[in-house]
Amino acid sequence: MALLGDGFLVMWHDIVPDMQSEYTEWHTREHMPERLSIPGFLVGKRLMNHDLDRYRYGTIYTGRDVEVFRSPAYLARLNDPTPWSNRLQPAFRNFLRVACERVASAGRGDGGAVATTRLVFAEGAGDPVARGGAQALVESILAIKGVCGAHVGLARTEVSGVRTRETELRPEMAERGFDAVVITEGSGRMELESAIGGIEAAIAASACGFIEPRSITYSLAYELTSHDMGQA
Image (cartoon, rainbow, N blue to C red; front, side):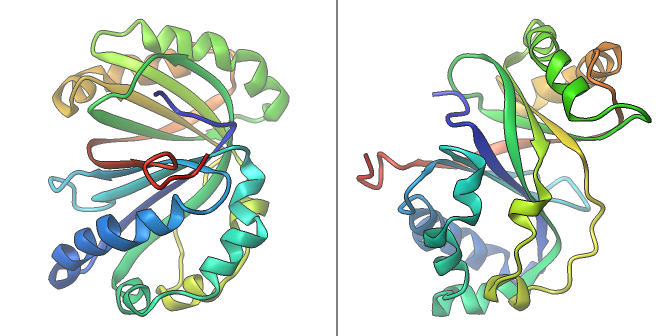
């Protein structure tokens, strides 16, 4: 079903070792169903790569638009965490969470693996430049062997930077931010890992003005949709 909606919320983080098993149960049985019950949330994807030393976990939530991620309904959930959430949030480490406006997509369906490439703007570049080159970029990435979808999002930190009770429960975030992210979906993690060089080369050759790529590949561990939760 591709990356539905005009906005997405993307997260990278780690979990302390003795809470990793419980984290997976919480995320599957309570947290994602809770999020996908919020009006405007469309799809949730949990990502994992246990071969990494940092950012072993990722999550992507897609939304009708980027404003969903500071809607009253969502902020109400963030400010009233469940007992299980209260127990799990302090176990998060290296937490980075940014809302993005999706400005370009190419491809159909869902891949079994996801690569995230965080980027910053080159000097003199910015939103208008990125928007102008984004569609050509995702189409060039889609042509790479092993890729089945590509998306460009521009960071909207004014949306995701709202402090809530949940952010207070997690250790202080000191992770480096970014200006844009390319989300690439592929047949599998091995295939995407082989494609990373081509993806980063396509980004460098694009007219988007993106530099300093930071890429990570993940397997898709779990996916849930608003339709699964009975939302229209």
